[in-house]
Image (spheres, one colour):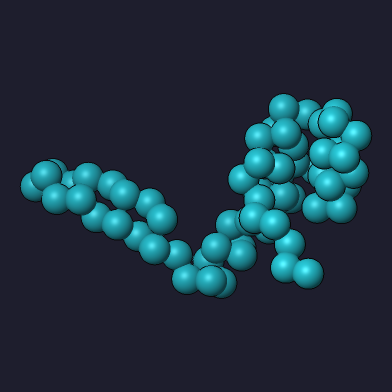
Amino acid sequence: MTATYNGSREIVVHRPTPDEAREALETAIAETGFTREQLEAQARAGRFGTELAHQTWFCLPPRAE
């Protein structure tokens, strides 16, 4: 969900659709240069390849099992 302000002091809230949210997560993962599985392995090891990978990991929702 994103809140923005326009010139008339109104708050505009954007709630992404499930498809938009999924696309945003896929894009975030792709930008790290790692797969989700690689990010999971880095998290288990407690060592991330990059700061972006570390930040992205904490933004990801848990996998549905």
